Length: 278
Image 1 (cartoon, rainbow, N blue to C red):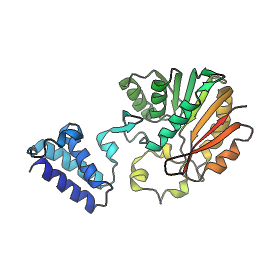
Image 2 (cartoon, rainbow, N blue to C red):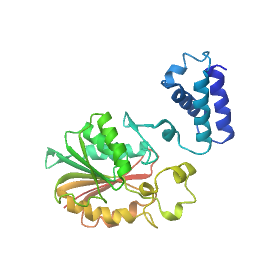
Image 3 (tube, rainbow, N blue to C red):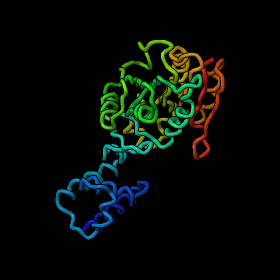
Image 4 (cartoon, rainbow, N blue to C red):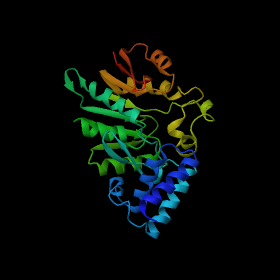
């Protein structure tokens, strides 16, 4: 069997299992089995599939058909133009979260000076913290309650040469008050009542601690907003990703803050909320 036939066979298996983007997924999994970039396949379709490649490719196809996300199979996900390591210990970074980065960078000027200190609460893979560390000159600290997640985040910071300090704690417990120009977070916001309705790839494989925000999905926002008020310097900015249909409720929690803005994603859904500490 040559590589072209292997891709077509994998595509058919994935189609039958109703896996999204079956051709692309087959190519990504085969490239991962071979240990090459996906682009390499296009010039080598006639090459024979080696036995060891077939063994790995077959296992990866089986895992994907069972629902395991492709990113957890390959251990990689692109975010803001950089490749990040991921594992089932961390949420897979989504393209929508890049709006958090854009909003944070746009508001990284405080008191007519560049933000010198940024805190990322609930960092997971470190995608936000590492990206802001590389895109700004600020001192970046990131927290997470999961030690396993922090190990992934630390590996990403080291792999991408980002200077980020990681702290294991619940939200920002133990972090000094009034220390930051900017606080960012992509908090858990899926309501526990939605467990049966979310995709199996998410429900069965991504870490619950990074997904669920209590009965109504707002539990972490209720704790995070007053915590951010404690942590920020005067006129500092808070930037948070929003859950589905949570914008109005979160906005009400920001009573007393100024310059509140809800930013939509490319599909038009409210995705990010920003506010300034008065």
